[in-house]
Image (cartoon, rainbow, N blue to C red; front, side, top):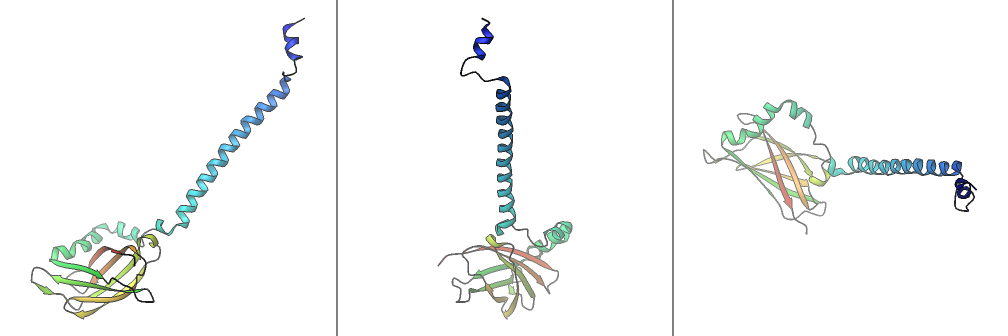
Length: 181
């Protein structure tokens, strides 16, 4: 008796065609399984990137990058002129979620307050950067500018100020924290 004939007659031995089919199914299934895993991971990443408001693009960032020299000059104008720009936010918000923001602009060199400027800004919560709020701050004298802003959420906030009416246009970016409670 031929040794190959004995092995082919054993109950555990499979015909060659059946073994090949099982191997093909295994390898094709493995490739498809890996493809499905990769697709699920990529779908999750795309969902997070598109659906999460914390992954927002800063408005007008492209134009600021193209005009970097002017943007940088405006951002440094307050320091160059010797002006100090301070922000204070009230500790509490009213029932509508409005919070008082006060910006004080002083000329440190001449030791005087700067009034009669046009101060506007964009306010947004860091977790909701895709929802900026346009603000216009009103001068109330002695270098103080006030606004009631919708800032009820606790966490980090960003105020992007644009100050016009001075010797040169200027911008100031201020990050502040609103505590819970």
